[in-house]
Image 1 (cartoon, rainbow, N blue to C red):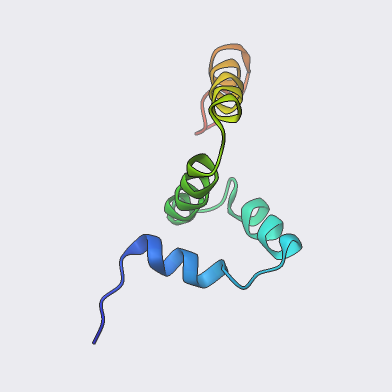
Image 2: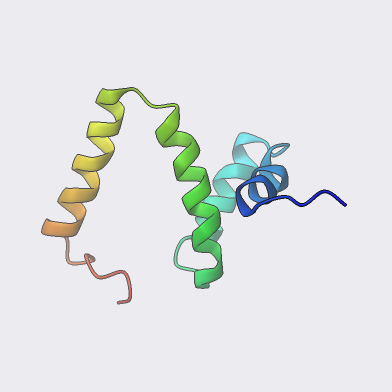
Length: 77
C-alpha cells in the first residue's frame, strides 16, 4: 500500500475542483475548526511557490499590516 503525506492528500482532495469550488473550500475553512488550518497552509504554500517575488512581498506586506494595524490581529477572537 502506497503511503501519501498530508500535502499530497490535500492536493488530491481539491485538484479536480473548479475555481468556484476552491473558493468555497477556502471560505468554509476560514474561521472553522482548527483541523482545516493544515489544508489552508498547503493551499497557501502552493500559491507562494508559484508567486513572483513582488507578489510574495505584497502578501507579506498585507499580512504584516493585518497583524499590526487590525483590530482582528488575534485570530482567536
